[in-house]
Length: 224
Ligand code: DC
Image (cartoon, rainbow, N blue to C red):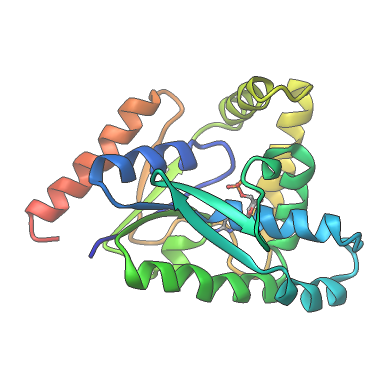
């Protein structure tokens, strides 16, 4: 069993890189941001105001979140509906960032995430995987990139999906999320002390994947 924790800010390439690393190592990829996004979408659908923390705390227990692997790709479900594609909008990004600051939401997802990693070898990506969720992970990677590059990557991604967006709005959204994610009281975005930091600003996806896979292989052959 191997647990690899990959953390970093929005747009650093975590999900794409983690998915490809998992594929090369033939283990599961767990995109934990998708879980926060699914809860964000659920709260939007419940028409609960984001200021009404008490109602959000009560309601999350009812959302019946689950994940399944279809052709080795993670899909996220609320009740029995596959919401994996619906959670990729800017509206849901904002909702996810807000609900992720609520302690009860994090506690609920903590067990959910740990239970997966207990049973399977995983590459798990998020914000607090190396610092909180999988503190004893075999490998901890922290991916970084400049804010302008991260905004441009997110912008291109959203355009590809057919969303009409303005680069400056995406940049502001990323800056706001960086601020929320790194200043919240519970499990803020932070590199674990024993994490290896990789700046992907000037690396292609393939180069970033290779760096991580090489590190893991070196660790495994070196006896971890
Ligand atoms: O990685 P992402 O953009 O899909 O994440 C969506 C939001 O969820 C992001 O604003 C931060 C939050 N998140 C978190 O707080 N902890 C995680 N482990 C993963 C995501």
